[in-house]
Amino acid sequence: MTTKLYYLSAYKKTFEASILKKDQDKQGSYIVLDQTAFYPTGGGQPSDTGVLNDVPVTSVEEVEGEIRHYLNRSLPRDVHSISGEINWTRRFDHMQQHAGQHILSAAFAELFGFETVGFHLGTDEVTIDLAIDELTNEKADQAVELANHIISENRSIETKWVSEEEAASYPLRKELSVSGDIRLVIIPDFDYNGCGGTHPKKTLEVQGISIIGWEKQRKNIRVRFVCGNRIVKHFKKQNDVLQQLAQLLNAPLHTLPEASRHLLSKQKQSDKEIVELKQEILTYEARDLFNQSETVSNRRFVFRSFEDRTIQEMQQVARMIVNKEKNVVVFLVSESGEKLQLVIACSQDLENMNANDLMKELLVEVDGRGGGNQMLAQGGGRKNVDVEYLVERVKKWIV
Image (cartoon, rainbow, N blue to C red):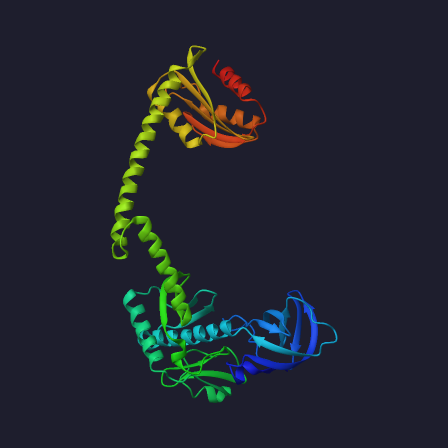
């Protein structure tokens, strides 16, 4: 069994140890020590990183009762003892975030009876899943206010190993997920919780808690928050974004919402005008195409081949022609590399012609897919044949 120095003191940064085992598994080469200050992944908290004899430790996992230290390269065979040093910045950040999670979860439970059913400590933010359908701004603000009040009181954060019988005498916030020896993390008169993570000794070391958002996650509400040094980083990141927006919009920070609304309103108007202009251009294009049409078997035949034209625009042009003109068949093609897109339209007076029937025949030629109805059909496929061949197929069909 490896002695877990991180439970004796979460503040221990360096240590000496003997190597009990060297091996490898699917994750890579690892060693097992007689004692370690490296916290393994567990309980929603990521593992510590650091170095063993100056070799980087990439992760630490507890597998089959062993605490395995995975290294980015193997140690020499003749090495039997090591000097270890954890990444203290990462460890203390995890201590702040994990303790902050206890405090915020306890605040939601204390104020509203909301139960925390999930926890994840990420690289940039921490999340808890509350067993509720919705969360209001007012309740979120109240929970943060209470949590920060507990932090400011600099209450002690105690850890204690107890038996199951002893644990039953404490007002635990949630049911225990382990049996046997149980580690309790206690903030007296506020929070009692079974937990195997690392925490600071005092709540003031958490520094503060800030909720940065929440969203629906299945049947729960997932709350995203940051604690301690992450608040400063998060504020700086947000402030940098706001400063950039202020420069782009040429507006002071406090007027950004109004400036953004004004810009969006202008954009919507511009988009509307663009759509109207594009519609007008397509109308002229449809008229021009019809004027250049040829006669095939007493019917007007409109054909045009484009490059990289959207099928939606071709549909609009074809529809404009057949809705306005009589006795007309439209065949439009867009070539894009080795791909073809086809649109066929027939005016409504051509009752004996079905655009979808012809499209099916052409799609066989190009190994394509598509569909439509009697008046309008579209599809796409590979450029297996020349466009001129397809044009002749359409003309023959018209005849």
